[in-house]
Length: 342
Image (cartoon, rainbow, N blue to C red; front, side, top):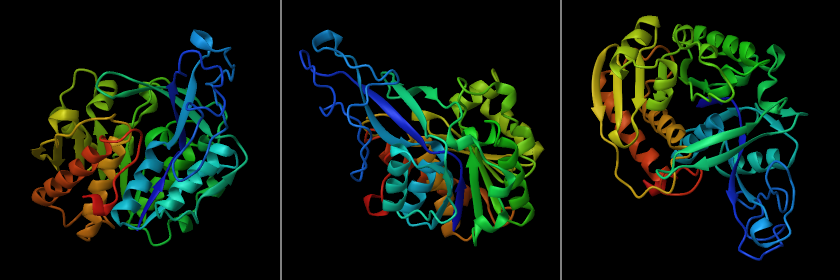
């Protein structure tokens, strides 16, 4: 079993109503998630202001469940790996949407915390290549309020691996408790995987203490965009050497359409991307991480410090992960494939 610790985020995608359509509420741009989990009817963006029709009708929000760690847990479960999600789930309409998606995908929610705070909302803007830039509404939301009392090691159950990262490791006030939990898990011979998944609008470069995390992390997966933010002007190879020296054994840098760089203790190889028609790239990195960990778990390599891992096996895991990520890019939003679709 793999445990995943981190946030759920309501990903909002703007939709313009048809010209002359004043009935945004309940219309085609009303917010909805998969599995019949509906957001508030007629959510019109953060301001909630309704237009009067035509060009002034405003924007609708199509809301889908997201958040890097939650996406990873969903992808793991759909691939067939037992996945447990350690998240703080709000009781609001978005929190119910998150629960529905996670449960429908087969994720174990027994270690999730019922949170009193509201859910985090992110409004996405997609560029021509399908990459998303997010505006976050995250002040005081449920995902960052972890306390030490909520993170005892018993929540891991029989997990062989803990995956975490993203904003949970940097957003206060809960970041310190999350980091302490990850370090304690590593001390108990649980493999630790981290994805920085940087969000410059919410955290500064100095908040991402990757070298410190590498002291207890075994797997580090990040994108080329993450790398450019964390270590500007540094090559992927030089960054890998730096983070290997800090302690991480397996580092994978995903490079978009150029594939991925795999580095195991300084031995390196590249994996090609799988060509597909891209709807958007939302959740692709999370799906890649899930594919990587799923393959390693299937080989019995998780639980400890990756002692039995060699470069050929790491490359095979990354090759499988690239397929999972590619299929995720063929559909809108973070909607990773099920095992039968591979």
